[in-house]
Length: 453
Image (tube, rainbow, N blue to C red; front, side, top):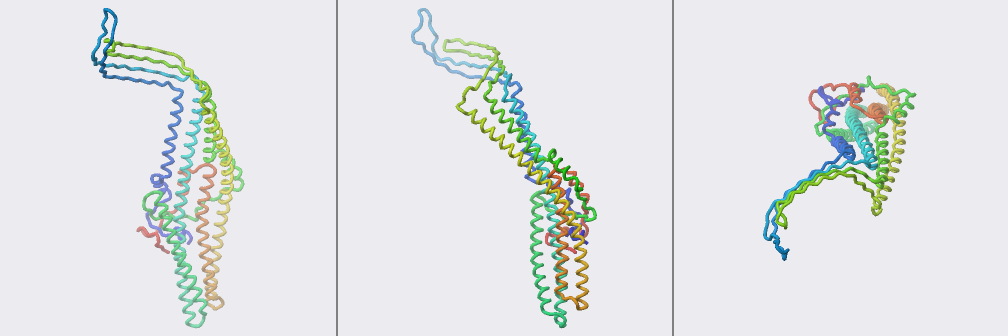
């Protein structure tokens, strides 16, 4: 019975959790942004590595010249040419530099590597967040459909009770209070149904925003195949695993290492830099003010030393800023460690309590069903009033709503616990998808507000 309630409106061809995840991978813009950010960060490694590789620069030029020259005076017996000359001058040069000693480049390379690792962990964390968002949106729509189905089912049951109360009132076997009570409860449930219809539309739009595609009818939860909670003695193991495998901690550690390396690089900016330099230059001019051209070739090789002795306080300020950033990264790491411990502990307790709540609510639902049957029997033989029947009926549907919410909360708690300990992978969704059942009933898509028994 409850499996049908949890499914809500279904059809023979529906959208599974795994299919929705595949659509979200292509359509979710936040996930696309995280991949683009990682692709951008990967370029930092190559940029930092370039400081250790030789740099070759080639330059060339060609110029048309028009020169007007007139000498005043001169040497006895020698006349300098005067007039207008037009000629071409050209040349090229090649320079090769190779760093020999650069402490700052070493620290900058280490910082770039840690930054790239942090970006990779953030991309993996974004993937985990995508999986959580997919499951949250999928189960959110299933729960909203379940709420709507229960509201309509309660409406129909109240209609029957309302007609029965009116009939009994006309026969003189019941008071007007029973009729008014049934009518009031019907109005309340009608308002709940309208609210549930809006919740279904909102949940459906949330899924559409992630995929930019229309949402089909969803698969339903198989209550007979709910995963078991982890045993009690694994909490310590979960905390130990989180210290090594948590993506949140991995990001914070990589950022702290990058900030530390950047602080060391800022200090190393005060150190000298030594590089080898070799160059070759060729120049040719077709003419000059003296009336004749020239060709020159120059080759050079040497070692350059650059030592920033004083830069107006710029290096000191950069060093202080980098040191402050490194301290901030260490505090961020400590905060992340506390947060991960809290999330794992809370997630572990949530999973166990949610599973226990499901079993308790299943018992409560069966007890409420039995109580309703007893109240209806008592009303038929005259020892119970219609108000008692309505109260028992309300208790039954409250138990059904609570059970549906507990089931979806339990499934989400398991995913959140896995995400807090390490990360979520597509295999986690595949395993969960195998526990769902394809929809049954009509093959035609059903509107968000429509319900079936």
